Image (tube, rainbow, N blue to C red; front, side, top):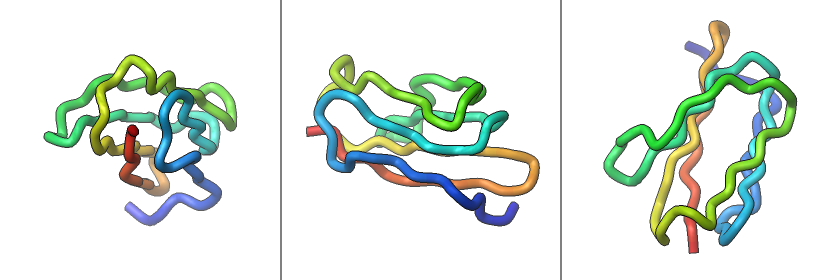
Length: 78
């Protein structure tokens, strides 16, 4: 896998809403600090929003996978 261009995760740290910018057709995997998958979905638009208010404070990982590359970023929930 190479790195995927044009990906962004913001704001970081966050409290409520997390924005994930990525190409359409990626697989988005959201993991807790232990690496457990909390959810997985295919991106259907360039912007995906994750409601972080339902998760406790901690460190999470956003992974984006596509056949031509991958992207991973840690996110802090306050």
